[in-house]
Image (cartoon, rainbow, N blue to C red; front, top):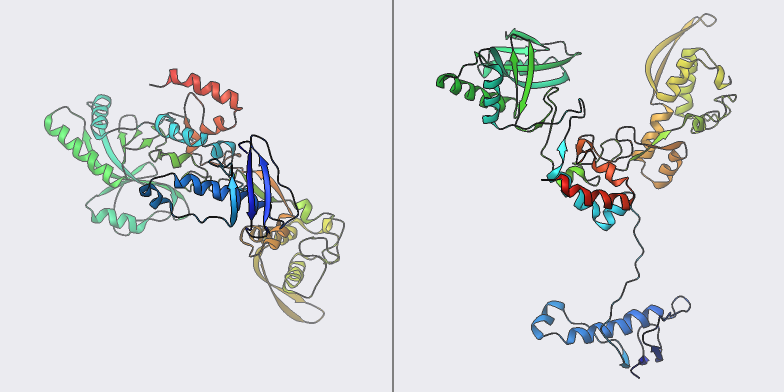
Length: 451
C-alpha cells in the first residue's frame, strides 16, 4: 500500500468507524453534506496524525518546546508522510490592503524612501535643506560678512491671536525686541496684537555686524545656539541692507518659506499609521460627500410633502418645529415648492443656523418670539455617517452620499509632507500607481542613480 494512505476505524467527531483508502500523488477532493465529517477526516485525523508522527522524530529537547499532540481516535493509519495543511480560513477584507502591503513590497519601498529620498517643500517645491550649527555659522560668515544682521528665533508662524501672554513670557526671559509681521518693535507692558489677524512673530536674539574676529565668532555661535533653543531648532537671519530674511534649521527645512519636516522614518510613508496617513480621509484615499440631488430629488415638491428626503413628510416633531421657525423668518410656507423657497432659507435648512427673532402680528396686536437652533440636514447626515452608533444608521446616511476621491491627498492616502519626498523625481504614491512590470524596471534602473 505504498501508493495509498489507508485509514481504518476513525471515530473523530461525527465519523463512525470509517475506513477509507486515499491514493497518493493525486489531487483528492473530499465531498459531502455539512456536518458529515469532511474536515474531521482531512484535518483532525490525517493531518493531525501526520503532524504528530513528524514531531515524534524530533529530540526530546526539541519536543518540549512544541508541546504534546494528542493521537486522533483512529485504529490505524498507513502510508503517511510529513504533512502541510493550508487551513480553512476566509480572507479578511480590509479597505487599507493593497497588493503592495499584502506582498510586503510596500514595506521595502517605505524603508527606501525613509533612507534615500530627497525632501521638497510642498509650498515652494524647493529642495529641503538641513544644517548643523557649525554649517549655519560658516554660511552666515560667508554670506553676510561685513553686513549688519539680526538673529531671530521664530515662535509663531501664520497663526491668529493677541499673544499678550507670549510677549510677557519673552520679556521675562530678558529679550527686549520682537519682529511681528515684518516690523521690529520694542516690547512694552501688556503689548498685544489683533487677535483676529494672522501673525508671524520672531524674537530678536541679537543684532550684530558680521566679522571674522574670535570674539565676534563666539558671539555669533552663542546667538545661533540661543535662537535654536527658542525657535525649536530653527532660526532666521535678517539682512538690514536688503531687508530680506533667510531661514536655517537643524531639521529638513524649506530655505525660502521656513516650513520644516520631521526626520523621515518608514511610518512617515504608511497610510496605516497616524504619522503617515492623510488626516482628512484617515488613509483611505476616499471620502463620502453628501449629494444634494439625493437629499432633494425633486424641487417641485414641498417640505410638507417630503421634498427633503432625509426628514420625510411633515410630522409632529422638533425638526418640523424648526422648519416652521425658518419659514416664519424667511416668509415662506412649508406647502411651497422647494424651488420657490428663498436661497437663504434653503441654506439654513441644509447647513444649519442659530438665530433668535421676533415677528409682530398686526391683526392680533402681539409680538411672537422665535428661535432657530438647527444643525442642518447636511451636517446631520455627515455626523450619522461618521459617528453613527449602528451600522443601519451609517448605511442610511451613506444612501444620500457619493464616494469621491479625497480632495486633500487626491487618493494618494498619505500626508502632503510624505508625498513630497522623491527619488528620481518619483514620490512613493507615483510608484504604487505603476504597473508591476514598470515598477520592476524602475527598481532595476534606480540602483545606478543612488550613491
